[in-house]
Length: 603
Image (spheres, rainbow, N blue to C red):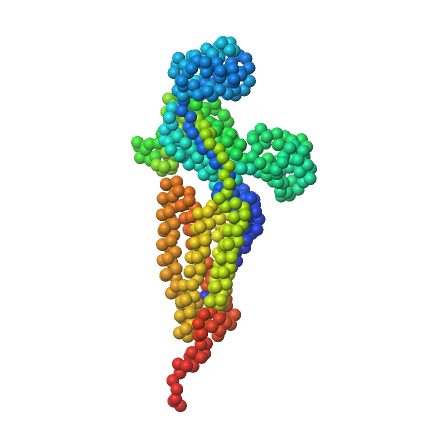
């Protein structure tokens, strides 16, 4: 038994050490061999990520554009006011009055599904103002109809990928109605720049340079002689590019210049059309861990169709694709060259992210092919939607933009943390006063529990919102409840005359069924909440259920392993004869109890 307790104690100390170390550093950046970099941390307390309601951020609403978009390149410099005035004089009802110049001689005009005659009228206006538009490619017309459900799903997937790449914490991207998408970006109200210079850089030089360049509100955090974090107000992409150039010119060359947050960068990225590319991948090893990609000139514009279905031969799920005539020719030449060559693959990228890299099993001559693999129905449909999204972009228009203040401002958050700390201290005080040494054990276990749960939140990572905090606080109560069940059982065993060591074992054994059943029922409830929350888009439900689930699992480990081993250690230290130190009631010592049960009289 002692060997088991020693092993459990060592495990507890290892877990505690890892948890304390993970919380001691606001940022964790480890290089794991064979896996890559393990990066965790944020600007929140203890490096924890905070959600929109705790730190504020950006709230954006996009609507799918429905109508006609004309992009024309004119012979002379385009003027928005002149073009808008001339088109307004035509009294075209479908004209939105939206005219903007993309560059010096390219203009974009938007209307609500313009008729052929109205398009010709607009072209005549442009030619009257600037001269003949000779090349048809210089007058491009795109009609955007109401988006389908699959198109909106594809748009959600693309936006989710893009805002995650921005480095925002737990962005919320969800569909609103049939044609709108809501994007909430916690912490995106400012721009955070992580820059690593090639040579040691001087803090004061960076500070003076930012002040000289007109930055009014900024913070500089020196990570090392070469690494700095600069936090400013939201900067546009143009401003960021200018800042990067100025830092290089005045401070010195840098190795990395990473940007996280920034509502302007988010807006620019979200509004771009999805980019789907097919590339030839040459593998240099059997597992294709090292490779070289080369362009084929095959993009989402060449893809006509992508949909999921079952393979007629095997019954397994697959993704069917069909290219247009140009794409079919390129795809035919490609598959002819690489058929059954396992070292060559067709890599498919969406926004530079790899979707799949299948091997060609046959020479595809007609541009109609099928991607097979270990697909489920859901994964095949997801891939088909992603491929379709690259070919069928949903033009999005930003119709609402606002910066969201934290529901709990910094002062309110500090007061909430203080209130939680006071509550925890009161619980610890009650446990120690009432259960004495057992209460001290429970308090130590509770501190261990809190450190481990927070470390798990950071390492997963979990972005903390108000529902997460609610679930965490509730799990603290469950952790205390398990200890109380154990102590009450121990008290009963001590009362009948058992030794402390024996009371610990028997008390834990009798309390375990109640602890197990209660916590398993809570875990089942959390699983149900997560299942429904995931499918119904209930972020609040998911946050509460996830933090409660983590807390319950850790509380079971804390009560059954940590508290148990601490009590056994106290028993080994010779406290067996002081049973009153472990119970709120007056209990005779073991020696007195045994003596009182000896019959009087006799020889």
